[in-house]
Amino acid sequence: MGKKILLSCIVFSIVLLSLPANGYSAGDIIPKGRVKITDFDVPNIVNAGEPFFINVTIKNDRFLPVKLKLRADLLDGLLEFIKKSTGEEPIFTCPGRTTTTIQIDCIIRDGDVDWYKEEYNIQAVLFQKIPLIGWISRDFSTVQGIHVKSRLGEKDNVRILSIKAPEIIDEDATTFDVSITVSNEGSFDFSIWTSVDMVEKPSILPGLEQYNLLRGLASERKELGRSNEETIKPGETKTIHISCELRETEANKERFNIEAVLFVNFNGQHFQVDTSTMQGIYHEQSFLEQNYLLIIAAVFGVLIALAIIVFIIRILYPSYYIKRIKLKEEKKRIKRFDSDE
Image 1: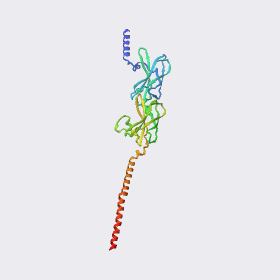
Image 2: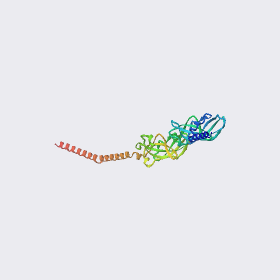
Image 3: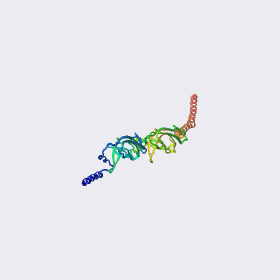
Image 4: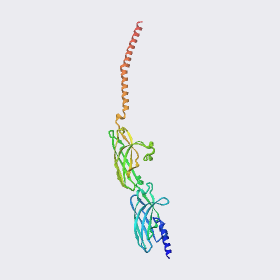
C-alpha cells in the first residue's frame, strides 16, 4: 500500500513539474466545460493610448464557487500570435450555478500597433485556480475584430480646406495676410502649425518631396511666414491667420505663386500632412522700374530725332538754300548771255 502511494506521488510530481509557467496545457488534465466564457463584447473602434472596456460573461455550472481571473490579448497575424496583453481583471470569485459579466479595463498603447494598420483581433482568456496546481487556462473566447486608430495613422486626416490671399499687392507693400482654414477629421487632438511658401519651381514628384528624396526634382521655395503651434480637436475647423513678408530679393517680382503647407507635431517630430493649391499674386511695380528699358529707348529715340532735325535745319537746309540761289543766278547769267548774242 505504501509503495502505491509513493508511486502516485511521484507521478503527480512529474505532472506538476512538466506544466508550463503560464499553464496553457494544464487544462488538458482538468475536465472542461463547467466553467466557461459564454459571451464576449468588444467595441468596434478604439483609440490607441486611450482606455476602453470589454465585457466578458462567465458561466459557472459547478455547485462550488471558483477563483478566476481574466486577461484580454491583442492578436496579430494570420496565425493569431499574441501581440500584447491589453488588460487583466484581478482575482475574483464566481459563485456556483451563476452567470457573471465582468468588465475589463483595457488600453492599447501607441507602441503596440503599427501606424499603417488599423485592423486587429482581440481575445479573452479565462484562468482558474486549481489547488496544488495553480492557475490554468480554463477557456478562450471567440476572436473579435477591432479597429485600433493610432495618432500616426490619423495624422493624415488633418487637412487644409481653403486658403485666402490677396490677388493684388500695392506697389509699396511688402507684407500681406493669408488665411488658412484647417479641419481635423481624425479621432485625436493634434498640435498643428502652417507656413506660407513662395514656390519658384514646383516639384516634379510632390509625393516624395516630404521624404527628402530626389532633391534635384524637388521644388524651390522660400518661406514667407508661419503660424504658432495650436491644438485642433477632432471634428473641429480652425482658420489660421499668417502675416507674410517679402524680402528685398522677392519684392521686385511682379508675379509669384504661394502655397500653404500644414504640419503636425507628434512627440517633437514635425510631419508634413497637407499642402494647398498654389495661388498667384500680382505685385504692382513702379512705372520706372517696370519700363526703364522702354524709357531709355524713348529718350535715345528723342535725342536721335532732335539730332536729325538739327542736322536738317543747320546743315542740309542751308546747303539746299544756297545751292538754289546759285542755281538761279546761273540761269540769269545764261539768259543774259543768250540775249546779248
